[in-house]
Amino acid sequence: MEKIGFVTDSTAYLDPAFIDKHQIEVVSLIVNFEGESIPEVDLYGKLDQFYDRLRRVEYLPTTSQPSLGEFLKVYQKLGERVNSIISVHITGGISGTVQTARAAARMLPHLDITVIDSNGTAICEYLILDAAVRAIEKGLNRDEVLKIVRHIADHQTLHFLPDTLEYLRRGGRIGGAAALVGTLLQVKPILYFNRKKNGMIDVYEKVRTREKGVSRILEEMAKAYLQNPELRVGAVEVGANDLGKDLIKRVQSLYPEFEPELCPVGPVIGAHIGPGTVGLCYYPMTPQIKELY
Image (cartoon, rainbow, N blue to C red; front, side, top):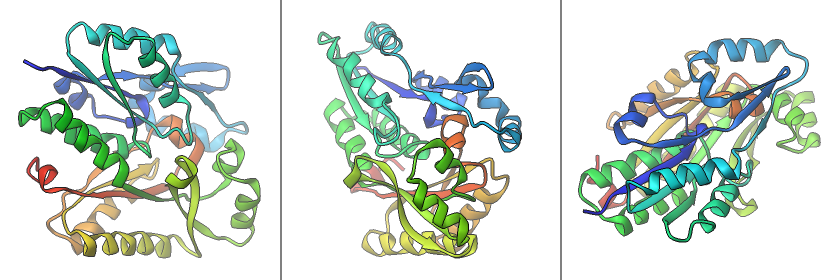
């Protein structure tokens, strides 16, 4: 019987129960914070403390990707019990993780490893993996699972609204001039991962207030709904207390048939986009994917 195993990285922010149930291997990125180098997975249960600390520090944490050796170790271990490996990761536009995963896969030609750039992060990775494990439970084969995985990676949209551009500016993830303009004019930019720029964070639209930003994100989802009402939806929040839950309530008030899931974003991504960020991710389901839900 064909057995498929999954690898992802810590920026997927998967629930531990989901990881355990589906035996997913998670390779951790590193958070370098005030003299400490901490695997991100070790901070999963301490998000409130992390963001409280982040708001107070003068120097932001830096982050680093997993090593080549870590990927080699995980692939070799997993390869002992599965026939194929699907490895889903944070977009190459903001991290070298997916490139390192591909390099490791090339060094293990005897293993069937497919590395997928999620074209996003956090909820983007989760939505791919959630559909993939459901597909396996339905008895789909490797090629069918990969077709689903690639459809989601190629078609999902994540729009997010940071509370401030200061974290992105200080972390070097967006142009300093854009951040300065946003700060001076009190502009709230809606950001996204631009596939035309290899998944780099880019400005989708500039608005004046958080409420206008949230409204515009919902309007963009409404446009996607008109093209295909079978959307799979998820929300993200970064140290934002109930903002993510509030966004989900607004989605459900407009589309009662949706069951959006919430992904609390952890330190690696949160350190770069800042606490108070909220966003919405969605993709059009094919008939085959719809059958999984």
